[in-house]
Length: 386
Image (cartoon, rainbow, N blue to C red):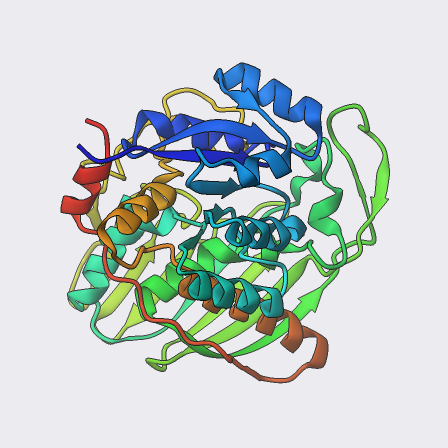
């Protein structure tokens, strides 16, 4: 039986619930202590999950802890991850790696010098939906992929989140930092690394009104663009038009569509783990559906409405698999799937999208990663509880 790694959680906000739930699914880690800049939040989290709350500094220096799970807000990802590495801890962070490319490079360099693992969400590309899509791409079911579309359109978190201001802040806000990592990581997994970006941005409105909670009805300033339309060229010469927006009331667009010289593919939601893959080939009369419900990380495990906004009944959510797979890689001296190089390449794309939108220039990427290997069923069975 594999050794269970003790994990220390820093950042006890809404997403923490999902990682505690991952204890049900994965067998090689246990969150045993938590900390938060707000002590009351940490105490509440500890009480709900029957663990101990400590200060951030105590947690970073705790010799029981092997891995820091960094669930802080995006602008704190860099400093907490850096402190974890400096204290000799492996670290797994929520997305993005940092809010700028320079800080991301610093983290990867430090992790390599210290010979520590740094992992980063999203891990949704390890789920059944994107992995089945990857299998079909590798089999060239639709031939050589020439171009495609990726689309996220949403009216914004202010309608359901009681403190939505960070999503609209100057340096940490906007849909590219929030939702970009899901789409970009999935695309790099499917197509390999990108090489250049052109982008345009729009601010849909200058003020937003909070829809729920104690500040309901209060307006706040929007300090960043809220729609980005980008063209990404990949090393394999595929071209993807990516739209990420907090300004769309409703739409009927697919999440990702890929167009090859032998057919087309509809890829399921990269923000979740399951979903059917649809394929239409030349001479076909109908779309073919490749189901993922029978896959270990595609099987439906959400049967009731969750408190998380992106979880509806009858869907698959195995967040935490990236952390579990990283621990398996540490134990077996392997490169993990949600590795720092992949995260840094995605952060480079995010930075390039922002830079291109500001300058109206094409931006060449500075850091190129390897395309992730497919996630084998054998490895999943080693880390997943029955």
